[in-house]
Image (cartoon, rainbow, N blue to C red; front, side):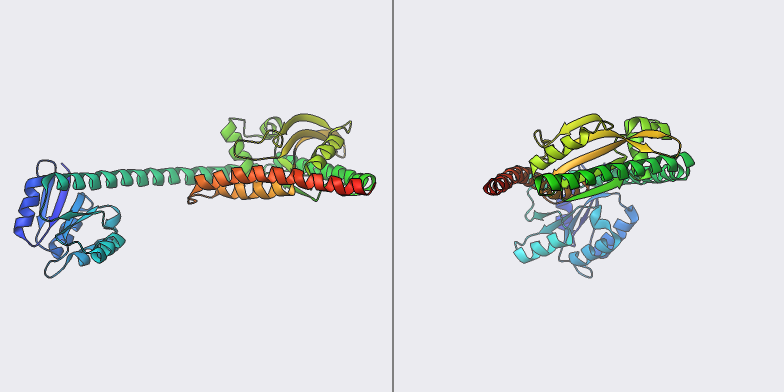
Length: 356
């Protein structure tokens, strides 16, 4: 049976609570706060709940709560205050100290049983949940250590370094081609086709984690054959039609191989994400060979990129209050951004037509 500790300097109260709870719990009793603290230390966390009177000689209930707080017991043992008062100030103070509930005098048997049962079950659930979280955190730490170790081995492999050099070269090749198109586009249409280009190369840890998660071999061949986003570029455009025009010019180049095209602008993800994704193969020219490398190129408007940056922060930040509401607001913002992008595009078109 679970152990309940009843602390009250009035013998009658202790005996009444003993009679009410003895069928369901092993009831221990203490006459004052000092005895209560001694028994809590003696039982070392085996107490399922503490029923505590506030007004006692020598060491009152508030002193017991203070001692429990210093020992970290308030996080593990639910406390129900035994009281005949209804003072809001005292109740607020107790709740601030970590008290779970109150048992009012005179005692009503069914109410006492339900309040104790609820407090015990709630704390048991909370403790199980905390334990599970701790176990998951330990597992994640262990996985992170493994990922770091394996990533370090990848980094130290000569063939891996060579592959990363090839991916960096592919990024430079794509950047150069886009910049050439930028110059031609600016000459032809008298405006810039994009605002900026951002590039990134996946880290060894991120590469290893994805290979493991997808069940691919952790090797240079495993990376080359199975991952398409090791090298990536993000092209930020002003307007949606610039995205489609620029991407069409780019993929029409006869040595660019288009592997996959995903249009999340016309078909946004459920969360509201919008972007045009291309997986391509682009040739790089080494000292003794020509080699095709996979590169992921994303095209977004300025507003789409701002939205994606904010959504990314939410996705990877833990314990964000009202996360569901933020997700809903982001989805609504995505729709507003789409409308604004096309409205601004139409205004630009009207300005351009007026110059003809």
